[in-house]
Amino acid sequence: MQRRELLRRLAAAGATPWLASLALASEPDNWQAEFDAADAPWKLGFVTPAADLPEAEAAVRGRFPDAVAGTLYRVGPAGHDLGGERYHHWFDGDGMVQRLAIEGTRVRHQGRYVQTPKRVAEVRAGRRLTEAFGTVPPGVEPPTSADAINVANTSVLPMAGEVLALWEGGSATRIDARTLDTLGLKTWRADLAGMPFSAHPKMDPDGTVWNFGVGSSQGLLALYEIAPEGALRRAAVVPVDNVPMVHDFAVTERHLVFLMPPLVYDGKAKAPGITFLDAHVWRPELGMRVLVVDKKDWNRRQTLMLPAGFLFHVGNAWEERRADGTRIHIDYVRSDNADSVFTTNRELMRGRRVRSTEPHLTVATLDLGSGKATQQVLPLDAEFPRIDPRRVGLRHRRVLHATQVTKERPGFAAIAYTDVETGRSQRFVYGPQAMVEEHVFVPDGRGAGWILGTVLDLAQKKTVLSCFAADRLADGPVARAVLPRALPLGLHGVFVRA
Image (cartoon, rainbow, N blue to C red):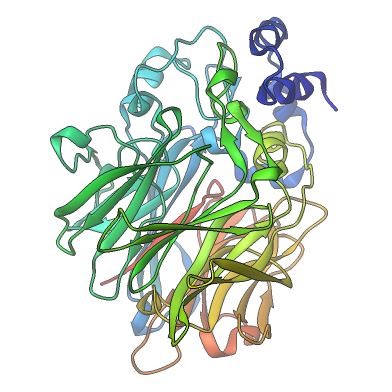
């Protein structure tokens, strides 16, 4: 193990943080040089675009169906280096929003950095000014607030004619849906300014939006209910002991469901030179706590237990009302531990491929009457689960996800559409030179629907947008658009119909 990584882990375990921080500060930072020297072709997905990407036409083969006439918005970390210094974690990069406008045989792309206060100040200074989620650059000051380090790089939410660029620890950022101009931070209510607003809000079939935020240093979980037109209905905080790193959640008709891995924040470990990430400790003895909150009365809460494990993403949840009580069924992507966030997603920034435990699609059942929870881990490696958006919180059968972990490079080589009740799955393999990004399901009232998503094609050194018939995924794309450039690998997106 690299000495630097060993020191970080010692600090994260609570072993003399100040000593570890002094040792880390004394080591030269050569991550940018290591990345530049790496000969891995896949590092193309982690190169920093020097500027915004102006609108450009893609080369289209086939025709995109009428049901996908609209815009696919995506966002992800893109600004990985500045002033010769490179971030030490993929999740740290300044966010760039991608806009792919789709109309039949025409696809136009535009990409723009989100002009957060952080990015504006740092670009003006020509260097990093504050610490990030997984990096403490040399000579920076501690953050004055969560929004002082807000990178708006994780997901997007269309709302009230705008697009919100979402992060984890602070405010959403308003984006003009057409021009991608940054319009400023979103404040839901004056007393909620700067409160954490997570990157995975859920939308009920009636348009109600639910979200949460984790206040790690305060041991609090913030809850939000937002009307379809974008007005805040309710917001409150609930206390959580041993508050964990929670990235995603689920909703049912009557409940909010939080799977809480045993990666918990330890304020004692957060010392100068120690990142926010490394102030989290892995405590498997806590198990995977499952917090179930009544939608109507947030004071009505119940905790169940699953075996210890780690997750980033949830697919969907639905509830079954029985004579002996309510059962909630929830599918998520489970890993045995959190190595991916501590090591794998760090080493990318040096152009290194470090494998971690493979994530698998998992289906859990929560019996609210007995208080018992069980789960089945399916033999399918998976990430980025998505469903038909009309079925959020309702009974569903199929989950769309990336699959086929590759040995030669990070990420996945295929997408799959899996029946979580039978385990049967259809898939399309992009091939050995493709790095698969998240795909989304687009409903079509006249048929089975469509699957839409992007890959980074390393052979062409370009990003490709593909569209599949959902019931004939294995047949391959019905339309494909080759962009004139390679986009930085992103995280999440959403389709907005024209």
